[in-house]
Image (cartoon, rainbow, N blue to C red; front, side, top):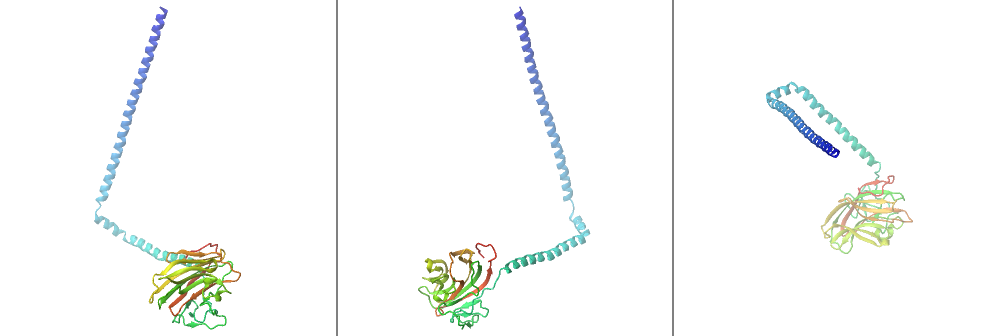
Length: 329
């Protein structure tokens, strides 16, 4: 009996728990339904507000579009003097401020460059007797021309080397950049390795000991090479003889060629570089420019019976006081 009562009680409790569980599920479902209904209502309200805002914006847009050209013209006419004054002010400001800014920038750039410019010239005294100079010693030629009318007669002039040196030799700290304009016209077809022009660095004492600098110094020489005219780096002591650029694909009579080359001497690093002005790239660099004697820049012009050649110093910079390692100008 007791056991029956207990079982009946347990069953009653179980029924109560099942009922509570069902009630919880019903309440949860009801809350979810209410939540969904509430969310739906909120979405509808938002959409309604957006729709109203869009209608307002459309109304304003229609009002702007309905503004006639005549009304716009009237308004512009009313404010024409203010608009004109504003435009004139802008133009005046640009006319005054922009040129001043440009002049200041240009002046600053020129001042910076001017601090390093120096006037490299050919030294007249050692110039060989068959070589001609311009009045300002900036042009060297193997022939008499209106631009180069001056022969040199001086007790210090060279007897072997067909050229001269720069009027400023190098020190152990020199960092010099200069640019050369070369030109030549071939009078008779070239053969062998006929020399045209040369720019080099050599011992002052040895410069006049050979026909061209490559025999003892560091030379960039333009010369005949087979059927072309080439630029070659030459230094006999280091067995350097390297063609680095074809200057002209013709070596026959009537060929006329001109061009520009940059040169950078960095004695801090004992280097001498030639720079192609067409590409602004370093074509070749000599290293280990070391000499017990003072080194000088050298310039040669050759074979006046075969061609007319000329070297002109365009400009030069002294970067000795700048911490430059190398330069491409």
